Image (cartoon, rainbow, N blue to C red; front, side):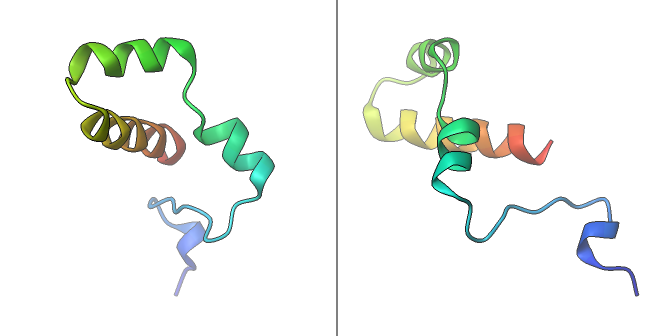
Length: 59
């Protein structure tokens, strides 16, 4: 049976390094502006950005 890395379903690391968190999951200015235009409050904005960065990472 093929391992999870051999399938079409990518996965997130269970323990990413601090450097990886900063490089991969920190939204840039354009993403922050995009999220601000689509949400009214902070909590939904954080959720939207978390979904965006996760989607970008998983492809």
